[in-house]
Image (tube, rainbow, N blue to C red; front, side, top):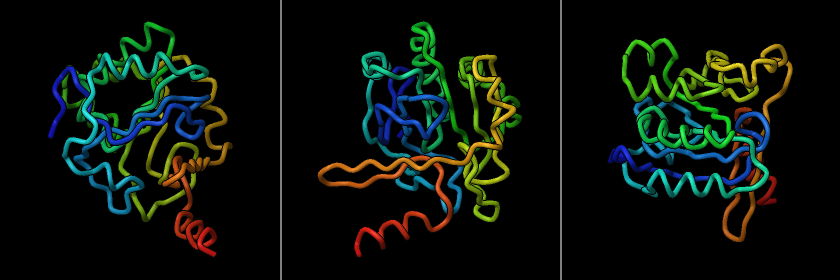
Length: 202
């Protein structure tokens, strides 16, 4: 199910993360994907089905009401499937000084060639774009990237100074534990979650 132009279909959100872009960020994992990479880090967000369907206004209020963050990150799933609503959200957030970081399983060139007004608008509002599908045969624990084919595009000047050190900074893994669940976020090396589960069980 695709969200309407004024709604977002969200698989999960986290109010504060330091592993999904520069600084401390509010992260939205979008529900639904058209890439379906084998070995995907987030297979639960691939199905095109409704999960948490919220208005752009409601999501903007959540992000703007979160203290101590500098921006929002869109992951998934595939954010470009909801580009119109995300562009509406990004406009609201950038007007309040927030930055926008976005993952996509498509290449920047492919997205630009579509000449889709909603995608073009979201790209214009994005400070950093991570593009390309996850390729298990090129798996690597790089900063913000799970495989070597993926690229970091600095689409505005806001974080461009990070470009010179992007390959010198290791990937980060972030663990969140509550009463019922242990969840992992960020980029982890192959087998990390399996080894972690074994250690916790022992």
